[in-house]
Amino acid sequence: MKALVTGGAGFIGSHIVERLLNDGHEVVVLDDFSTGHRHNLPEHSSLSIIEGDISNYDTVKQCMSGIDWVFHKAAVASVPRTVNDPVGSSLINYLGTLHLLEAARQNKVKRFVFASSAALYGDEPTLPKLETMCPVTLSPYAVDKLASESACGMYSRLYGLETVCLRYFNVYGPRQDPSSPYSGVISIFTNKLSHNEIPTIYGDGEQTRDFVFVSDVVEANMKAVTEKACSGQFFNIACANKISLNHLLKTLCELYEVELNARYEEARQGDIKHSYANIDKARTLLNWSPSIDLKEGLSRLI
Ligand SMILES: NC(=O)c1ccc[n+]([C@@H]2O[C@H](COP(=O)([O-])OP(=O)(O)OC[C@H]3O[C@@H](n4cnc5c(N)ncnc54)[C@H](O)[C@@H]3O)[C@@H](O)[C@H]2O)c1
Image (cartoon, rainbow, N blue to C red; front, side, top):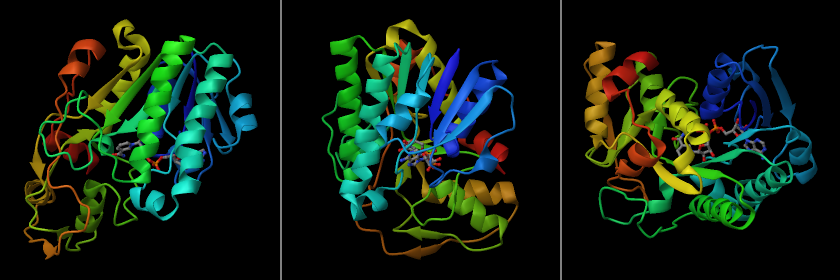
């Protein structure tokens, strides 16, 4: 197959590229390198890299020629950045998705996989999170993800384009950038510990997250292009586990063989206390389930 991976130079996208190349597929990466890096991508005869912006429709059309599968990962993936610039980020996070869907329809793409997010559940207190829950959009990021999911569903129903939306919870693994205070907490903690620095926890550390290792996310993407029954659907992609930040740090300290306590600071405004997923729908229709537990994933990362 020939696959287009938008955001292929980023954290999750680059792992999808690697898997596709290993499986013998031809890959086109479209990335503007705003947060992604060329060094995340291998030198490979079946890989072409196009530097460009998904908010430019002509660029998107050029990349879509002859494509069978689209893995759409490109986005302004930082919630605070979308809060600071709701219009600019929407041109990428929503209009960019629409450009890709339309170019995919014109080119008779076989499957279109969209990277959605657990941010859609907002601060809705019910746990675990189920796909049937009503979304609560607390940021421009969440609004754009919801609008993009809605557009994917519409392209399936109206035009027959086969789309699948994957709602990632907290993805972690190699190549995740730890540089921003809003990056994935695991990349921040491992970065601190590997430099013998003390990590900061905002709040009491008993807040929980549902962490999923990047290779499991890659596998979900592969299922999304191969499983028949998942077209037109959206799925939670997580481990269905509640892991507190205190437990996470304790596990990391054991793996690094260090003893330390976190620095505790006041809880950040807008941070959600608990988040974990029901993944029965993905198990049934996507034929997917996670295979890497937290300790195994952290060991691989370290
Ligand atoms: N990492 C997570 O835990 C998580 C959770 C939920 C959803 N997601 C979603 O998964 C996707 C990938 O996230 P990630 O963590 O790998 O982030 P990332 O920042 O590492 O990757 C995003 C990639 O998109 C590229 N990009 C950004 N704007 C672009 C544009 N206008 N045109 C072309 N390329 C552009 C960046 O350069 C980067 O390579 C995103 O859509 C994100 O919203 C991630």
